[in-house]
Length: 400
Image (cartoon, rainbow, N blue to C red; front, top):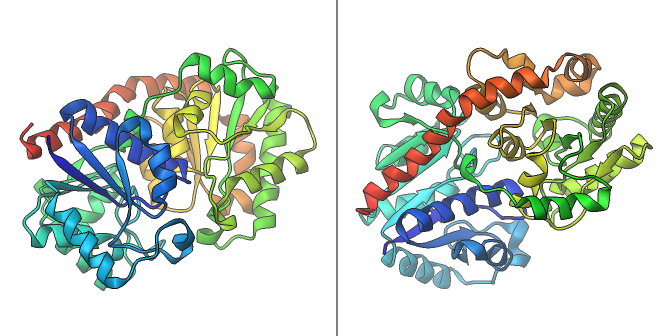
């Protein structure tokens, strides 16, 4: 049995983060029976959420986030140093996930390299899997990332845009970067019985036709948009979908953040109230990412501002459209559908979405869900195989 340390995790309050942590932990246990330790900002919460995987969750001693300080133990610098040394002394491999942490969008790229750097200084193997990288505005951040990436035993990206940026923009040798897909394409879904129970309070069943809309409370922070105009655009979209598609719209709050600026439940409730029609409804309850995937897997169409909610649909063979603020949305959706689908049909920039009704009209009136579904299901085995291959490579690193 090997000891694997997972870094790049912030908090499973975000179901997208939960999707990454849960999938990686389950794959490592399924494939090799390894002992998995997850570094996180909310260890008690994540320990409970990830309990089915057998993973141990500990407060990240390499990155201490002030915004979650009330959800982790207080430690002195000496205590943090001692814990770092103890964790590394027990570790056979460090795996970095995080999807898109390594970019200038959030300002946390270089701090989340610390665990990898410390491991490499001790000749502990390191891997980065399923990444979207860059772009970096600061050359110092880019240099720091390249220094660590060059020493990784395994480096995979989840879309071609990042692959091109690393090879053509940052100068990494092409043979060092492998095109893969997001680990969350391997996330299991809730059972049919569980999904029925989740939908029941809305008066729906998995056999009913419905559209899922996943709003992001946090997207305005990274797009320069006002909260009011963003909520108004989502409300127009929800009501137009009901009137045109003649089916209910289920609002899915994918992130239950303790910080108001990133809590999707607030925005979902606002949209439902503003819509003023019973067919626009919010999915209630403190649900797991597998519960949400169960609901998404039975939708006719999913429109998402949260990338991992879109992946939950796509990995179930359900057509999804992303409304995003960075290249990661466009890249992952384009990679999943392949080059036979026009990216304008599956992705919209959130700024264009909010500015007027052109994007809304295109989504509502021009989206051919049946065509997207057919294309997706033809392409999906390749995408899933790419994700599985990362764990085959990890097992080779561990000597399994």
